[in-house]
Length: 395
Image (cartoon, rainbow, N blue to C red):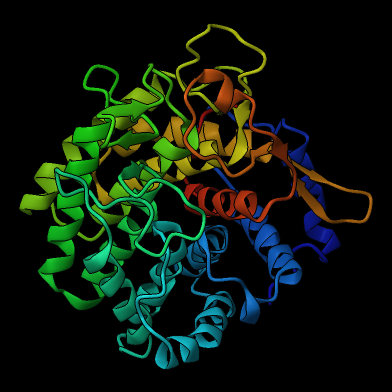
């Protein structure tokens, strides 16, 4: 594994970034050097979490997706070995048990890493996990417009099964995008487009171009009903669309459907990026004005920055126009990372798991927790992807 944290020669540059100032820059733009910090976070995360025995759930998926992006950017196979160990550990259970055992979009999200390995290896070694995911999506409850409900038929927590949560657009949307890339099967692409449009019809505000957290089909209403847009949830939508766009060409029909909607959401994000720290508030649009309770949040901001960076890579956003927003977000996330006295890195300001709530107070009242797995993954994703983008001279 990499040894960034333990290399004293590299630590001064890390501390300089963590101090929030960065190196002195010439008027000419210089590339952002964020990959070493992403690798340091990845190494520490691998040390904290046993790759071969992770739970099969959504927070682990988000963390492992960050490790995947380190592999995608660096080509260092030790990163891939981590999420491969996770899938290898889970695989016998899928071969021996009922494949319909997923209970929600959240619980099926690790299948994204199985699909990722199938894409990277060009093999069907993890097909049992993918089959389980396909069977879950085939049998999951659907709303009247065809949108797949967040909770499945086997619902141990008693949530409503006639609700969609925008979280699902990453939890199964990224899986569909990866399976399309891995197999070339247009059914995966068709299902993604169907679901993206169905979720957008129910949850996207046509004026603000941002998403309510959920839709309740029985009551025919959004949750929350008011213009309260949760940052991390909106980021799930943005990231999944960016992942799909990276598998398409601009001439593809699906690109022409998804890209304009993706860009409108990206533009809505840009209008609300905080001018002080470059991040986004946990309620993006700050409906109560300059409210100190509406904190800028680390994981959602990192995911938004990553979703924009992947859009640049796909050619869905102009690199020159959008790089400043991505770099500013990356520097803001760097400012949330401290090096403790024991040499370990600490990621501050990640909000806890968030179910749909009825009002603004619900979202700003969600506790922030340091050093969550949910904070590691998005930070790694953004810092790995933003590496090399031009850094404005005023940063």
